[in-house]
Length: 348
Image (tube, rainbow, N blue to C red; front, side):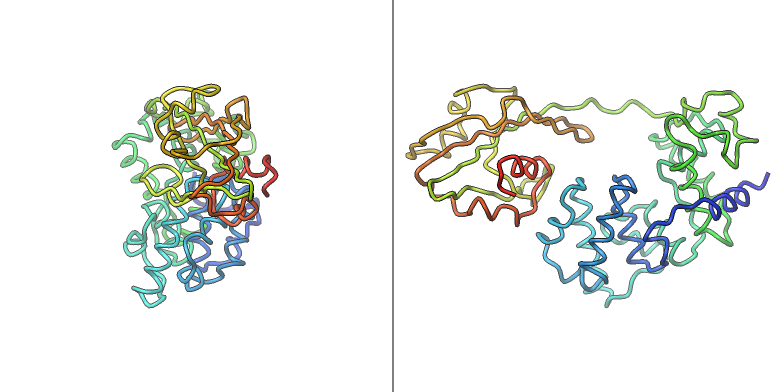
């Protein structure tokens, strides 16, 4: 069978109409690939459209401030992607005189651009014969060829990279790469793959042995860490609060939040007042009232972490750090955890 021919023929008949498929502009392709790194297509489309509307060119993005970029990114998670996107735009505009890198090797110099993203941009925008290997590609190839090498091992990455490159249609890498990814997204899905309508079903080994859901093989991931966040929501009589930027190297870097007390285990009631950070925050300041906003912890699941959060509303006459009107908090880029609290607290 001609793997690439069947694949591309299917793709041209069945591909989704996505906004970044109507152009070969490397800026648009780059933006779409960064958004889709950890995001489903349906969720990513409105973000892509908003970014293009706000920052139609690399120059527009390069001249933007980080807070406006993070605010526009809010809700997508993995905020380092947005910071890397901004850094890449500044590098292109200020260091490369606005000239977008036009080959795989130079694309890798952009912050946040790895082999997969560089190959996608290079092949789609510049027709460079570089194979892409993402989650969809791993799944299709591992099933088709019955490959048991773990995809998250060094050996697995090398094996799949070599195989994908061998299969690539070097005369039409853009359609080939997009076809392989599209097949994984629409047909060769993680669960309940649609094997009966797959263009490759006559030669797929996983289908032959009826073990499709055994692939791809992965090494066990590291255990999930539990963290316990307690946010202190100060509310003065003038409706002002304390809102701080996260500056430590951790999740949600450069996003805003209320004063945070992280504990080793869940705490209840007035136990919060015994914490060192609470005592420092209210040193020589009397508070009028303290209560939880949520009796049940809000749970946020990240890749290797699970965060259990309580919000503690503390009313005071005043506070020397309370500089921001509660009604102004909606202007700041925040994690979705904070965004959802603000909506429930009737701030946004």
